[in-house]
Image (cartoon, rainbow over all chains, first blue to last red; front, top):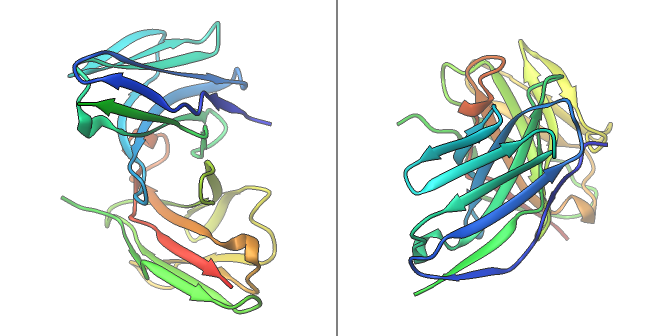
Length: 111
Length: 115
């Protein structure tokens, strides 16, 4: 069973702060890791993907991957109220093209 | 910008009825997916489809479900005899080719309500 675990939150941060979202996964064969943002009633929207251990930065977002610890995180710098959403961690294994999603972490950025 | 489209946006049906959910993937994409998300729960993979056949399916995708690409553009999910627990958002997605999973884009979803 391929599990992806996230703290469901809610996580609240003040505007301008750093939001830190965490995810662990069970399948050591997982190859690629994704963070999606989902607003209520909408479809998931890809924010970041990461394949290699270490950090990957894109604008205000940084994804961090540690395959030894089976851990992936997302940092959002200078958080904005528009960042308020549910953040989904997803994992793709090398056995196929399907994704396994976590339950998501609800983030609220307080103005 | 190309996008995945889905129709209808909301479908209400009675238990035991058949429903067909429709998707138009991005035109040059070759792999197609259906996911579902029960309210408040995680997004769950149902099935992937390539070259006019199912390439992978989950335990959820039982004999009540089927997929089809009846023409060059539409991709459909049929539920033969709906149950209350089929009520969920159903998302279609596509990627251009194998391995390009970072280019997976989701459609806006169809909300299925079974009464």
